[in-house]
Length: 410
Image (cartoon, rainbow, N blue to C red; front, top):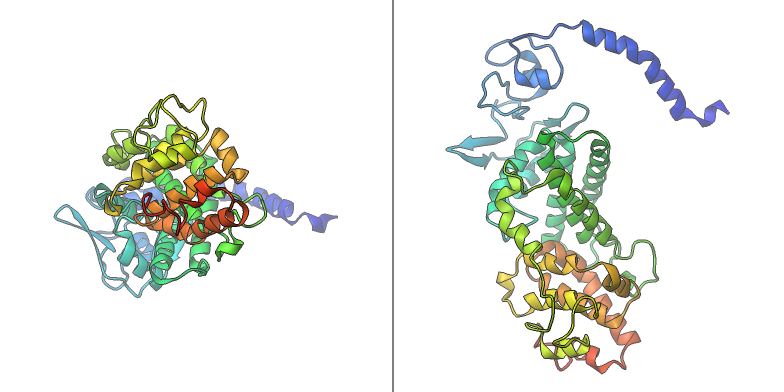
């Protein structure tokens, strides 16, 4: 019976040793003039100048001076920071062969050469919102934070590996081992962190990680082919699973408030405003006539009397735009509409609801890379499903490839 509870034994063992550890830790006298890194790591600094021994052995720049960031990694043989500030602009150094460590108070992770290469190649750019120039600067600042928040570093690396798959793979390519590893680590570490009180300094890393995890969930369908994908496959718990993650991310909004004045994301106020911009309350202005007819919309239609109302307005908002002008904020108007009765219709595979999702996939995937990764399989799956089970619905078929209206709602 005792052998069936190894975790309980481990917990008891840890509990029995903890008082001694606490006494030993309390017995160490902290230096009054030590560097901030040692204080953050709760270690006694030897106060050597210009670099204390603990920072040198840990692989970070010693920060007696206020202009040196906390826990700033260095390349061991050069003494140079991986991320440096040049005339107020963050520049990325070439990847190094020696290991670089990231750490917070409870977790550490060693970046290998491949991860360092991906940091250099991708993470100095804005991958999640490529249409927003403000995010390039934000991304550089987040990259510095990632060295102090392992859950953010893992999430960032997972997004970088996913973006690399988008660039260098075709339909049917599975997620790489690196993607799965960093995604899993980030999820576990963030969940653990959310069980603790959230301090002001933690808000931006938490929001950035939640946004990255939402993108990862959306861009990584389980299916490799349209035939394996929803809605062709049998119903299961994973249907529209990306919706749950997206709603979970928004649940953090009021906690971290990314629009607060001191937030790194404050510069994205315009993008957030587009995401949350109000949709029409009545009528069919801006909706293609044939699409309005299919959705049974007219001048007296509202969200109260027609479940397709908001979704049709949201998808129509981007249909006539050039692909180069479709932004992340505009595409998220549609996902914001997937709730209530419209979400129920999608889960029941209602043909009109499926067609609206199909039109959104086809348009948004041309501009947003992480939408394209899911659209690779779900867009043709929806098309095949509608042709297989609703071929008699002439109005729906007209919008599919080869139909009379396919090019008009392009």
